[in-house]
Length: 61
Ligand SMILES: [Zn+2]
Image 1 (tube, helix red, strand yellow):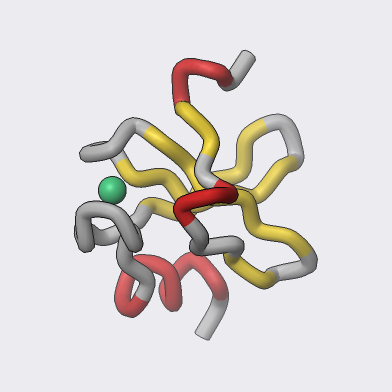
Image 2: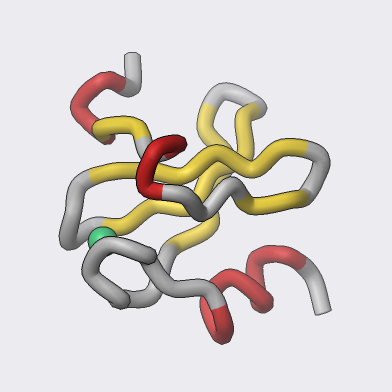
């Protein structure tokens, strides 16, 4: 099972508990919560699912 399948099956946003979407943007892996409009970074295949690590999607350039 790859991280994308794992994310979509098991990982939920710690804030709103909705499913996350795995995406690679500018070679950076991230898990996006469309409800909260934030993303959680993935570092060395480990999702950083902490509210403190969340970054606003609108900050993506
Ligand atoms: Zn959320």
